[in-house]
Length: 326
Image (tube, rainbow, N blue to C red; front, side):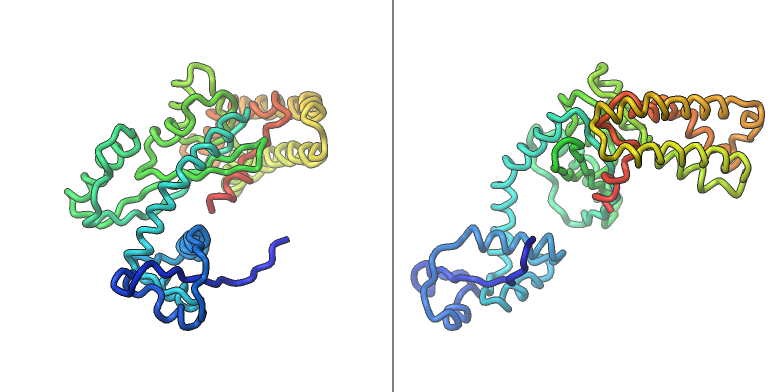
């Protein structure tokens, strides 16, 4: 259990007043009445918390500085920017380590969401060999050439199924290079949606990566189209319900026992779903109908939907990963 104890600040004197950063410690020193010990790590953590967990942009708005001032520290905006930049540099090795931990597991769940990135008057990323920066320069430069003030960027999450670690990654677009770079060297199963970029990642992996599709996505397609063909939708939804009932029973099972249960009970249900999709009644549904689109999705993703049947560690859907990105 965590108890919130609020935020305080210690001020460190660094030479005479001419050397003291603008707006830094005059008021706080009087309030403290002492020369506190050097506590740069704590101050850095507080600035990071203010700018991320509390969703305050201290450098852009100055709100972060006012928030910190209410607890006895009044740093200049330039100081806040320096702290954020230094922290970003220092934390990179730790993030790289977490990435390696996630990639070392046998299963990764991934999802992404849109993020608006303001690019007007923004400097281009550095000219290094990082392929993400190369892509970012191309996209941002193109947007600036067209006088666009912002672009639709992406935030990705990569969730380890076997370790309690989630790593977030930012890209300027939904280009396949994003997951391709993160998953480089990964060997195992990837639980994801039907984004074509994941198919490209799987193909380029030469068999190292197996893409698994989310059963909840497939069920949702049918559920959303049920008004278009209620009888057929009811039949499919009933079989999906049986699949999830099996998963509910297997929650406390070992991976080995869960695998055995899926092989014995879930696989026959999927066999019935395949046969139902191939029936004359279902083949007569027009592809452009809403229910026809759901059937096309099921048929196109069918083999990917079956991947979880052969791995007792693999979840039936990607719901937990998707919750992380909302």
